[in-house]
Image 1 (cartoon, rainbow, N blue to C red):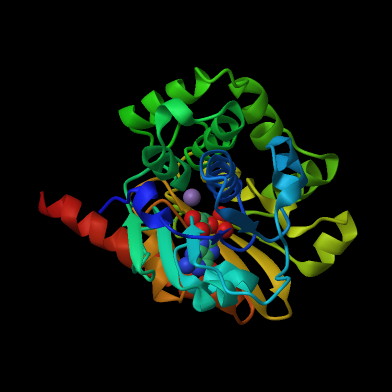
Image 2 (image 1 turned 135 degrees about the horizontal axis):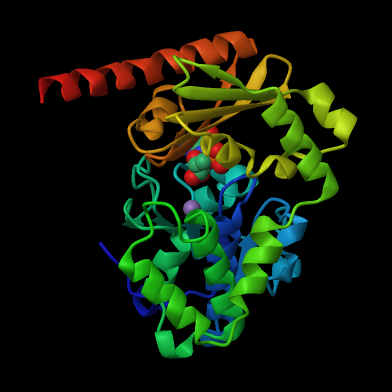
Length: 326
Ligand code: 5GP
Ligand code: MN
């Protein structure tokens, strides 16, 4: 089901937007893109956007300095629009605003999303939430700065128009956004490819320490708290490591563990398509997409790797059996 912006915004005085914890390119792009459009096209509505700290690399997107990183006055909102967030818990500190809002909307493309808002626009096949936001807007009224935000979101969640979620419609939308006069190359270079020295160092460390398991069909790497301290890295510096691991020839799945507390790991999973990593993440309490998913798990890194590998193997074995039956 789609939404009509005019209908959902009718009579709203105060609207809040929010995305998932540790906001990535699509989360920031979809939230800021919609935020700027609402400010321009619905000036009578007071709109705020709530996100955890936006990574420095995204600061070239306009209005990122207006993002609220904590809840101020206690007034409830008439409407809360949740973007790129597969489950209400992933809203982080903004969850209380979602709960207290008179009405809620969810715009998302996570396969694991259970449609938790009053109005839901969830399309698991869509490349990105930014693409879904574009579909809700009046094309003629999209400003250059909104186009920049949405273009960044689409470019990030498609791995720069490479992943299988990139449809002909995705490319048409990107083309339309380019016609707004944006500098697409610069957006991709500065927000996606450019790495700080620290980011490259920790990437190098993760690649050097990686291991092939499950008969070389899976690659695993772990970054611990003490290494983060040594390199003076922050969690956002780890973005992209799992995609690099996934590029390894011959592997079906990449698994990247980041130690977030003693005996606790944020796990990122990436697949080339034969294993549904969303199913595995959901099984352990997380979520995501068929080819990209994540979950936080407790235990030693050994236990976490073993538990996830078992689920990967179940799917790999099933696929092999099916191939033999053919
Ligand atoms: P990443 O590995 O880059 O953190 O996340 C990959 C995908 O899985 C993203 O779409 C992200 O929103 C989703 N994801 C990551 N961690 C979690 C989690 O703990 N819970 C849920 N529901 N989704 C997650
Ligand atoms: Mn997304």
